[in-house]
Amino acid sequence: MATWVDSKFVGGVSELTLLTPIKRGKVVYTGDDGKQIREERTYEERLNEHLKSVQKRIDDGIVTSVSRIATIHFARWQILLPAHYLAYDTDKVDDRPPTPLDALLGLPKQKNFDLYRPWLLFTSNFDGDLKTYLNEFSALIANDVDRIWGNCEGYPEEGCINFDAYWAYAKKHQITTQAFFNAYPGLGVARIRELALFRERFDALVARTRAPNGSSSPQLLAEFDKFLSDNLSYPQNFPAIGGLFNAK
Image 1: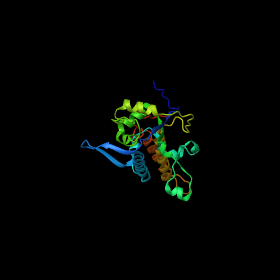
Image 2 (image 1 turned 90 degrees about the vertical axis):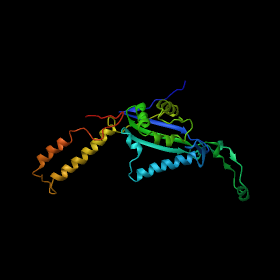
Image 3 (image 1 turned 60 degrees about the horizontal axis):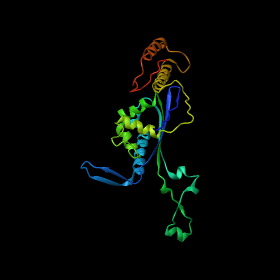
Image 4 (image 1 turned 180 degrees about the horizontal axis):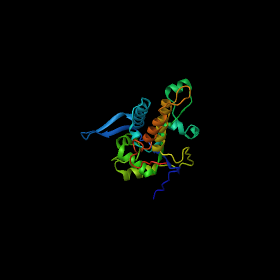
């Protein structure tokens, strides 16, 4: 029986770290006509291109699918190459036979990093528990999850829509976090967004009711009453499945 690790939970926020092996070789899939199609790019290249497209959307201010997860504080995807994680262990990497040009130039043998595979590292912080969080991935952004982890070994053939298989896959590849720090304990994403909106509205109130010389507007009391009325309501965009609202 597999031994699963648990996420750290600090101040209402959980963490997750997944390390999944990327498939070797060229991309192969079955087309709509049932025939097998082989691409020229590798699974690593396809994954890299997809993650770059996600980052471009973020850089351009375009909403990404992951933003639909209302409880997420932070997420990062990184492709770890052998040259990264073997940087200090090159003595343990088999030598690659020199090419004719290497021999002609008198260059030393090259280290054969091809013997080792790349890995996908995923780290995230989120409100609530891990199973609810991953269920949101399955329920809300399944296609995008499949486009990422479908490039990794052992990923369920039917994708994350089969939540039991997806849950087992994630738990199999979850690695232990030795230390996890939360700078804002007790503050969920919904509460943080509400407080940011409150500050924005408060600054606008001050701008409307305070003259440059420091005097108050005659409408201060009326404006303040309206401000209180507007900010006693629940926040907009209430979290989706598993979302937390801290009514303090």
